[in-house]
Length: 503
Image (cartoon, rainbow, N blue to C red):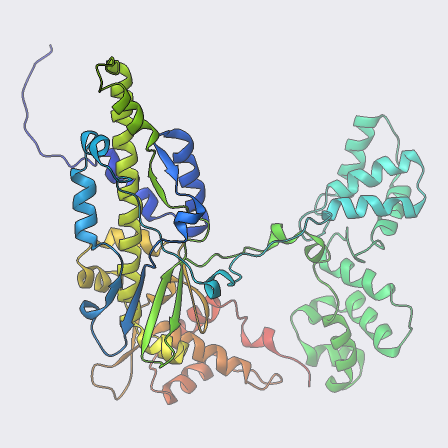
């Protein structure tokens, strides 16, 4: 039986304008231009300001005295933030129609000639793909049309590293079914060996051992190191992989140091023959900084510049103002209701979009300002001076919600004297320091120290995790062994046994 009842409750619901602002806030500089282009295509009341007018835009940057608090930061802008936001909130379609000026528009950060010269984007010329390169080399093998078909199938089955992971028997079977051919195991193996000698040598190998063997066999100089390397890979591959050099030397009836020429030769071979031949667009990710952080000439201040290269200055299209005036004066017929409703709707959308762009800029600069103040030692002296910091610290300092800080930080990068860093990099957990009263350092500082110790270790006797713990304690970092092992693994550094090298 159905029953009707009333229930009261409170629910939070974001307006479309708030949703739009939050989406723009988490959009990095590399994607913002595309977002604005979409809005320009969708809303006829939005237009770009001409290049001549853009050159007259006022510079919008923040100067941060190192020794002062963020409250004393100077915002160099033509209109105070509160005044601009209040104006855009109260600005109506009637105000726009009666305004003799251009109406409100979104301020733009202008850039100096030096800033325009920053190479924050890299253009990569189109390259021949890995598969296309191999296919073009098949003509050098002078294959019959029948064998060319199987060769194309083999090349098309290679993975991104150039290995043939799919069983050759399965490829031959599928080719026989699809093309009605009868390839024998002998001729398919012979063809695979010929493909493996294409450039890069070792491609189409079925495992690492076969890949290295093909490269060694292709070396024409029959040196003792080459012959020994072939024997090691053919007969003692497992001991080589596990770096059991003592056992390996015993089985080969020689001293450990006698293995060095052959081991060096193997280590200089290419374990992934397909990777270097792929286009850079497939294996390289280029970063566009969202902020540029530079010291002033006197070294006492920082200048934070928001990267808005390619981002146009927007304003409401004045043509619609003239259209509304034309139909509302001198006794002419007023605009139809549906036309006026359309203009009003698009005007409100344009107004809120401009406001969202402006608020995004203000929020980004406020967050970056706070980060620079909190991490000013890092921006002066480098990674060793990074301080532990959490999102809540920045949120409380600038009076924003933690979720807003997360949106700003996620996927954004800054460029400073020490390189390009994701904003997430500046947030890390604290590691207490022995002997310091309440002192702590960032776990990234500890990771850097671990990496430094490993880079300077004796390759013949690398440090194990227990030894790293003792060395860190000498630096006043009291960490458990499992913590050191976790940090080492996060930096993709193998265990001591795998780092061992013959000297």
